[in-house]
Image (tube, rainbow, N blue to C red; front, top):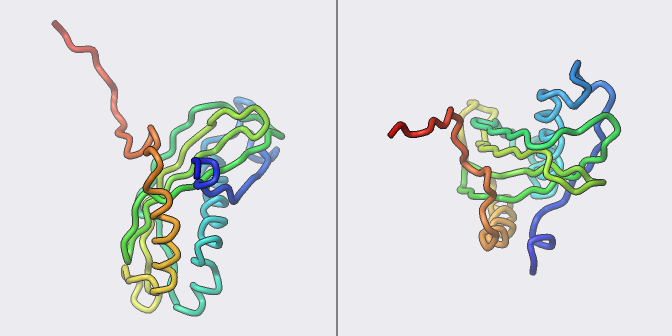
Length: 164
């Protein structure tokens, strides 16, 4: 099985006119919104959908996120999102999205997310249901064989040349 078959390709979109900023390209805030739509598609795919959340009185909260802006996208550009599970346990899910220009094929942005499963009864971190954990494990095990994304766990900082 190659990467294209292993990675989840669950969401596509088009850069909408309201997402364009004064620079004439997609505004940074809308990259996060588009990634959030890709997250919704991913959650639906793994069974962490509205039916699950209603039945279990639970939800998810994002506790950490990195976005890397790598290529400009313009109004009307088609977008394709690829998602992979990086790691997981009974309460946490670490995953990674890549946003590609669907027509030209270049990587436009990446989004790394750490989400936690929350009980809405006490709004505290809680274990996911067993069936959901099993589904995540099945997909996560297939994703473990993939090379880790270059932008995973990136650190922000100014790189300085060493003075001799």
